[in-house]
Amino acid sequence: MEEQTKSRSRYNMSNRDLLIIAILSGIGGVMSTYVGYLGNLLNRVFGVPFGAGQFVSGLHIFWFILVAGLVRRPGAATAAGLLKGVIEMLTGSTHGLAIILVSLTQGLVVDVVLLVTRRYNLGSYMLAGGVAAASNVFVFQLLYFSGAPITYILFIALIALVSGVLLAGSFGYSVLEIVLQARPFRISGGEIDGGGAAAGEKKTTPNISIIITAFLMVVLSAGAVYYFAAVFDPPWAGPRCQVEGAVENRLTFQLSHFEQHETTITAELRGQISHVPPREYTGVPLRVIVEEASPLEGATRLEVIATDGYMVEFDIQRVLNDDQMLLIREGDMLRLIAGNYDGGYWVKLVNRLVVE
Image 1 (cartoon, rainbow, N blue to C red):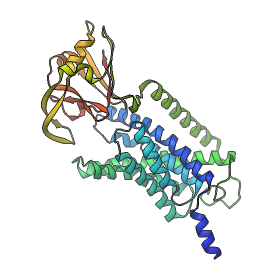
Image 2: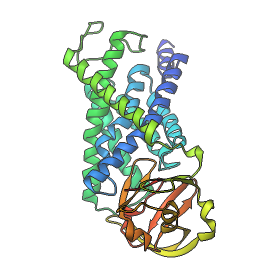
Image 3: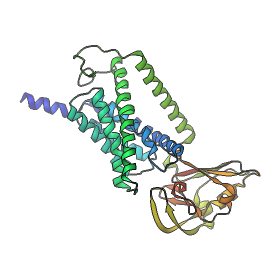
Image 4: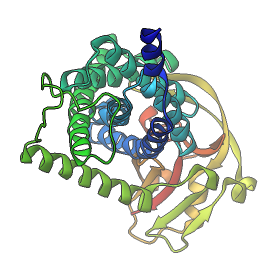
């Protein structure tokens, strides 16, 4: 009877546990939109349509490590994964409903690894973080088969694994040590397991570890503040777009403002990895919108920017003479169709056109 009671209590969560899950999942869901922005910046730097963002994929898992380390109940990270995925979708994830499955899988993997290792120490957190981060690569492949070579998929999964080990496991462990030494509350399993420290033994985090952890937290927080203040466009505002920069008329518009110019083209998406056969697209020619803004003399290029920070550049004269470039509406977002360009120039979630 006593063993059954202990087993039952191991799976029961207190109000405090549920509150921790709710708070960290909420923050993590919002911050993951910013991490997606960082990932798209890395894709641009490396010149690939996807994959480079896996360098920061561990930051998505970081929140599950915190939840697991503070709650220490089987299923805590899974619950956090579900809630975080819902919040991430609502705050503008480019993956829509699919992000819920991805996040849920990541939380489940963290729970399974910690359940198998039966330890809450640095090694277990690093293993859980690495495997959970790598899992997103394979889930996305199941949902959106890209046709990429298996060697490329395995390579970016390895990048995600390393990112999860460092940015989720190691970084999460360091943050947990700082939080638990501050003792704002007691955790269910006692002291954090420092990889063999005796129960009840007081463990002091090296000053250099505190400094590095605090520095990373400040940098990430500052970047998030900039992103949400200057870049992020909430999805509930509707699919709007701005034209700014070297123009006579700055515009903030919806496609309905140009409905009299709507046209239909047939285009084929030919990417380095993905391919969509020829099909019809109906929308507003990009040149019409740019002409309405009246670019200033000397303007040479047009930047098309998405809500997640992804950006492509075009020669503005080519845009003004190209009838195969449309801005279309897909659900609650605007998308650029660039029929004469490869798939990397077909931008989703367009919200800014900047003339330079």
